[in-house]
Image (cartoon, rainbow, N blue to C red; front, side, top):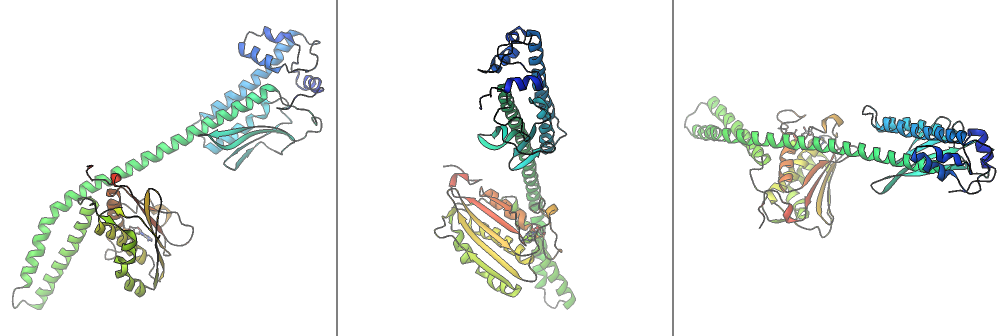
Length: 428
Ligand SMILES: Nc1ncnc2c1ncn2[C@@H]1O[C@H](COP(=O)(O)OP(=O)(O)O)[C@@H](O)[C@H]1O
Ligand SMILES: [Mg+2]
């Protein structure tokens, strides 16, 4: 802190009537904090306050104290207003700062948070300034600043009082607490939202598994008897075609049920060591002719020395196939499909990136729900991503839609490298 200049006290008395050193009257104020403040005010060499009466000095201190408390009270009120956004709160708080300072009309204030500025009207930086850091979770995220831009009269002197140092520190602390609280509330709301989503998916999974079991038996009967009827000799051709359709429809329905059962995690993840690179480079070769036909360039970028993951190989293949089918369907006019593997200390990741139509913002929340589809009935069942989600979760992993600036959609699938995190597996 800058020391006060010799001419400071004279000016401070003229401008604000503040007390200066030597005014013993401070101690007569019955408020213990007030007394404390007055003691701190008496900086060495701060002018001669002997001309002022003790009562006047007390009144002045009291007035300053009221200014300070009014500011802090105002900030507390703004911070507890649930209807205001964080931005509105900071914009309101910054306007409360100059009135609490020694030269209210000349002071300008600014709050900086994560590079965003909130300023009082006509804000300009000045050579005379005071600031305190906004520190959240031990990280400096911004600052509270008070400036005197028109510093002609103040040149070479400090216009700031000791109490103002305490005040600005106090304000920065209050703002930090407010932001910490707001962010904790937002994180809690997001967590609750995720839990509700996971709960809903689990409930749908249970329901789907029940329905699938119930339907499996009659469907098998339909399929079996249709195939038996097909063997009947001398069937009229129309009847044969009809029976064929019944068998096809039953097969289609059985496939859906199979997917539903996977979604409901009927199968355990299994514990074989699976190499994602091998799946990408070898197993997915069956998609090469499909890509060529669709005019899609298939790029495969694999990380050398990719660690293996404990997983069920055919289920992982199913996840990647579902993502590739979606990507191809999203690029009817051709494009680029990129599969890329990577890893870090804890996890192995596969990204499936296409240059297709992309996914509209308002649909992003619903794509993992079973039976959600934007496609025609013969193009999609709406189970591809739900199944992928079920499998990946059962492996203790995560599948998510990544933010993408360019055209298309990008899904990333992350699997844990460690065995213990496998869901559904018994610990030895
Ligand atoms: N790569 C993609 N590009 C654009 N949209 C996609 C992509 N992947 C999924 N979607 C959207 O998510 C929806 C759900 O996908 P999915 O569960 O696989 O069901 P389906 O493919 O049978 O419609 C799709 O209907 C589509 O709207
Ligand atoms: Mg699909």
